[in-house]
Length: 185
Image (tube, rainbow, N blue to C red; front, side):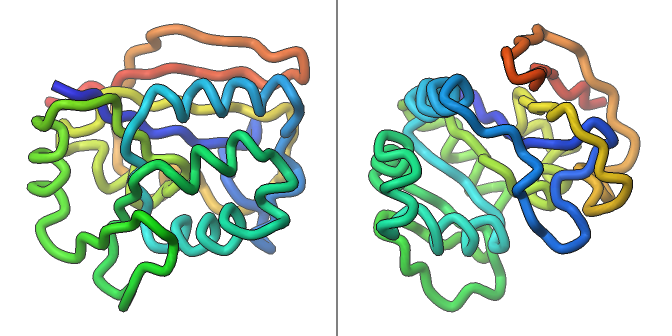
């Protein structure tokens, strides 16, 4: 069975976006870009919630996205994508399928198919909603060495969830990547 994991970036105080939705506080450097590309190569399917999908679709297929990191842009643009949304009328990013109903069942079927891992890059609301379904095998949380003081909480609405620490990875920038397994009961 394929593994499904979520990858999210957070501040040290647990916010994935500042109050204005800006992401300029994130430490993105060459080391992170190499990691991001290696992580994308672990997967053959990307799954997004609508909000993250719209942000990614507005950036990666553009000249600005391709200039920012050509290898990551290529991986993002060529990897098949699924967006979970009841409100998105159509997907404009090439290689995207919309799932608007029975998302948990569709994702469970996807995990049963042969292939590489399935990654949810970002999409905190989707991740929070999937925590108690047993579908998520791993959470990868990149903690940036910054305190925002306020913003959008990483797992708002998730409810209490126990996690088992699998491993950690430290970056020279001060970022720390935490690998967790959600404990579902």
